[in-house]
Length: 294
Image (cartoon, rainbow, N blue to C red):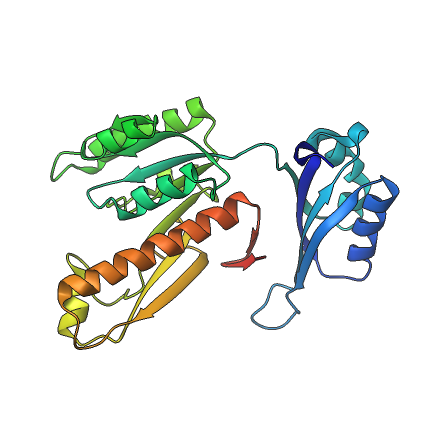
């Protein structure tokens, strides 16, 4: 099969018997070839949702070679199990907007991974509240939008800037916004606009070591583990559904600058994984949590 005929089906519904059989049987009858299939049932309990999740990577024959035809094919099964289901054509790369401030390690890492082919995305634009990375964007041939926020800007000024970003998202057909160390608190309105399509990265010391130079604070307290968390953006600051986390060990021999360097490496890797998994349609929402099919 040609890559242009490969698709990913993601679905969630109340867990019950016969879901896998219905999905795989329908694909077989339609002449599709299942390349990979993963599923997870969140067994009903006091702290679970009782939902079933599935991701199927398959190749379709020529007459079903577009997402619309396949969506129609799944109409009956979707209604039968009251599924939330989506079909994604792998020939189409998601369009991603990256936002950054003064720290460029995550931005630089994402751009390199994109250019090397590791990230299956298109990046039509970069937004920053500082001009520092205009040359970096130009070196990759990506439009750079400097949308300044003067020091001490009030809510109205920030909201005006956010509306400019929203217009850019609509204009460029952006499907995912990545906050690559974008150091601004987003308004509830902006969070609602980006719901389910914005990923943020932060160090995993929170709620400890808030504010400036968290790695220096961690060094002062003798921290032994440095970590990072990538999560979806919500109006609850840094509390959105978690996609990926990782840690690195540190010890007393390292300086505050060493702590910072380790932290930046972890942040870059964790954010890149989260973006890759999201754009490969591996992340499904499960209440306040996520199911990640790796």
